[in-house]
Amino acid sequence: MKLLSWNVNGLRAICDKNALDWIAQEQIDFIGFQEIKAHEDKFPKKIYEYPFKHMYFNSAKRAGYSGVMSLCNFDSEVKKCEFFDDEEGRVLEHRFKNIALFNIYFPNGQKDEERLNFKMKFYADFLVYLDKLLKDGFEIIICGDVNTAHKEIDLTHPKANANTSGFLPIERAWIDDLLKLGFIDTFREINGEIKEKYSWWSYRMKARERNVGWRIDYFFISKGLKDKLKNAFIRDDIFGSDHAPVGIEIDI
Picture 1 (tube, helix red, strand yellow):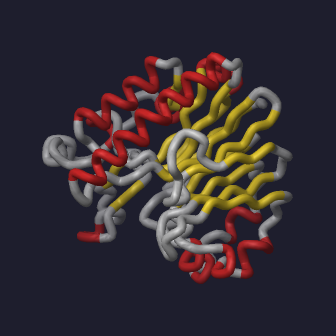
Picture 2 (picture 1 turned 60 degrees about the vertical axis):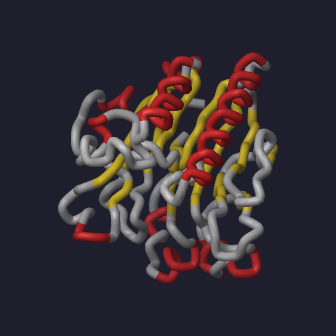
Picture 3 (picture 1 turned 90 degrees about the vertical axis):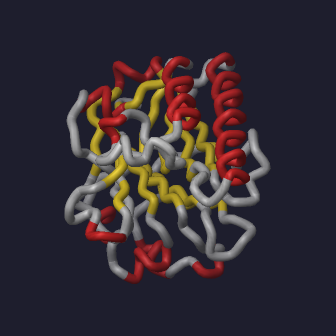
């Protein structure tokens, strides 16, 4: 299976740019979008034209904010968030076979201390939920915009951002805890310590043109799926958002 994830930073905007047309040319089994920023009545008609069997979405109560959508070509039982009060439309959980596949737009903590605390509670509650699923016998795939760079190699200016949300020790420690629980950062598993590979760039100062970025979009898999992982990649050749799509190929 080929699975992708992309923070599109507005579904209507990205469709208006025809920046999704490439997904019709590739054999994709699943793509999860984050930050769709739209309710169903505002979805662009074009999103229904792409060759996928199913569409699922979880929009924020607040119009024009957050929200996630999944397009997929396999059947699954779909749940919204079971571990957090998800008024912001951040989670879709797909269950098929013995697998739980998450499409998540994790909170951003840069606005103020209240939002950082909100982000850390989301992280903590999700980790508890993952531990329960593992104990219940599920293999797990997590994709989405995690809004944290894990290591210094994952952003251009680690020292300058040491006190910036998205690279704070407490945020990075959560990814450490996720890996200790048995999860694998698929991009590093396949690509090792390759440098200057990012998934997000500021719109300011020609950051993408200069490749001044952060790797904050991930696919994590539980260790039971490690031997089934065939590839992991960042599609930094795809434009239309301040994020690049990320993806994996996995035999499931």
